[in-house]
Image 1 (cartoon, helix red, strand yellow):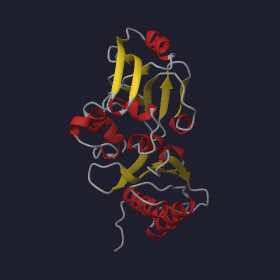
Image 2 (image 1 turned 120 degrees about the vertical axis):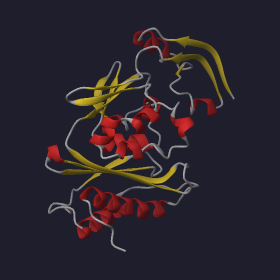
Image 3 (image 1 turned 90 degrees about the horizontal axis):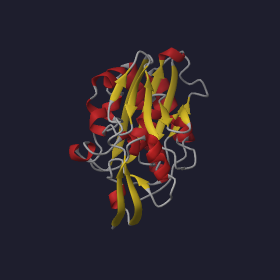
Length: 269
């Protein structure tokens, strides 16, 4: 059971930050994972009055507030146009619409959960987080930092010329993923490929084409070879949803299929 002793709707980020320095206090977010914990919370800190529930568009990026819901992310036309629908694909199988109407981007990212579809997508998209005290840093860096008492305010997705695809394997339609994969070809970086494997079940990890497998372009053969490289390279673990070896194989298959998708090629039978 979750017990909350005091509730405060923060009037400023500074107030929220100061309250959050006490270990027994917690940021609420959408409160969907929090309510499942057995925990005694001193002060529950609500950020809903701080204007963090919008996706702002600039010439350079989309700036996603921490209180933006996963459903808002799923339906955002600009983000989905930029990523060829990968933003939508990364969240549309998370539990159900009612859940996504409440779960927040900030909670999904700050938690750095091993099962996070959102973290997998944002890492591949080259996104940055914006923290109240620490400032901006790449999601890829943030994901592996120790947990602290800072407050995530925004996630920034740069408007880069990219081709993207998001795929996942689930035992049932709305379950946590057994494995997830987001592949982005960054045309503004000379066609660099970022292949992020999530739900390993550890935190998402970004694999790059260090062997030059895709140097001559994405073909059926090079996609298969890169998928084999992912299977060989990615570190995985075992839990109730699948074994480490199964995850390795699935990750390689998803990577191959995502590459074929961004290249507009069909998978051979």
